[in-house]
Image (tube, rainbow, N blue to C red; front, side, top):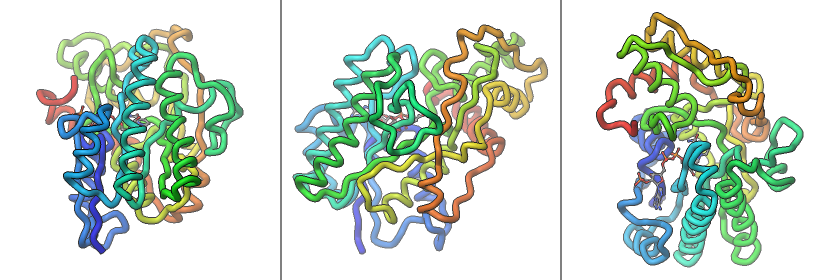
Length: 323
Ligand code: NDP
């Protein structure tokens, strides 16, 4: 069967990982490229998806039968806090244009990407799929969070009114090759990798904010890529699925920093600044029970191995990486 799969945001951390898996997974694997499949990885240079005309032109150019919709205005804590209206509006425009165009162009299936930071701030843990709308999100990123939540609302509305096969995924913290390593805007793992690199290069201390105690679930981008490929082929329900490692595989920021020190062979070790105010939430575990029940067999890459691959990519691509 022939299929044209358009990946919006195809040049980012997650999009590049899907491209890697599609190009490198051995034939016979559940996640390998199948005969008749054509994959398109689009960036903002192919179309600014905030613009309905450019969105339509992109769909008319490639005539996708399936869409994995990753494109988003993504940012760290600071950008989210300072630019709430921009995060809300840009992401709502992008999502509305993609879903509307997918409907009028009769795309067979769209998977959109949410994030665990869309969940309510005050909620019982673990996070599960049915808790997305049960209270306001954390104040620091409510623009981004509400825009993302609306995708789930839109998916339900499009299914009920037009019978569209639209669904979504909710990944926890992602890391891997092609990440954003910018010291001001990066997420915790790429930021710490970059900091440790500079500390080693300059012979300065590797300082880590907070006391290192918060626990988080991290998913390797290439594992996440396989889950998107699975969802594209094997999951046909409107309700979202959380994409995460097991709740018992939470890892502390202290252990993350120490693992980076080990992988980067930095002799002086990490220094924790021990300011509990810098910690953020202690933990916000998400359940992967629904995913594991549906997918059956799936082996996540061990954290150290995934970190080694990410660091190797960063060192090999320092000049061109987002630093
Ligand atoms: P990146 O920032 O690495 O990539 C963003 C992608 O979106 C790029 O390809 C970018 O294109 C594209 N894009 C941004 N704005 C526009 C626009 N106006 N029009 C068209 N394309 C645009 O993001 P990630 O790969 O990290 O994130 C992918 C998805 O995963 C997002 O939806 C994000 O919300 C979600 N997510 C990410 C997590 C993480 O930890 N990184 C955690 C949970 C969810 P260009 O390269 O041209 O700028």
